[in-house]
Image (cartoon, rainbow, N blue to C red):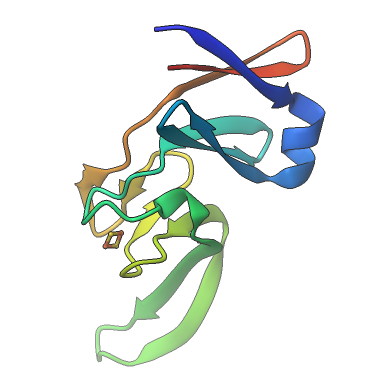
Length: 121
Ligand code: FES
């Protein structure tokens, strides 16, 4: 495993997300709520380019005991990456699919040193 510098922390914070091709290994780096997260760009469903999917806040819907709903709302902080191939969503922080936490993205080690972002690949 070797460390690869992928750019300045400030630039990646500004971008919010960037996908890198590191000699054939694609990794998406995301900045969310003050921290960096990195995931292999390979959806566990059927291998889609998940890190290039749209980012949406988690949608919640309360269902009352009488089965009426109070409408939908967006979670204040939880954000999901939506895989562009079939729409499965993964939490940007944990990489888990909320409907089945056992289904998750493969993490990559990401860290900041002297203002630069590094990935261990
Ligand atoms: S390949 Fe990602 S949802 Fe199917």
